[in-house]
Length: 62
Image (cartoon, rainbow, N blue to C red):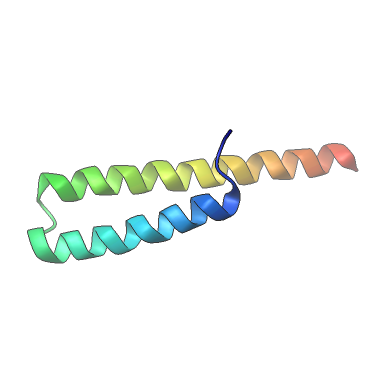
């Protein structure tokens, strides 16, 4: 089963916090920061894809 919108938002918020902390600790050019940033990007893309599906479903209902 896929994650709910709220779960995705919570994951995005957590990844943003972690990315900020990691960037301050390790420096923005550290490979671990890039990896965390890519995870955040994937979560944001998942959110927008899910929202798009919701919009299309609502349009079909009309």
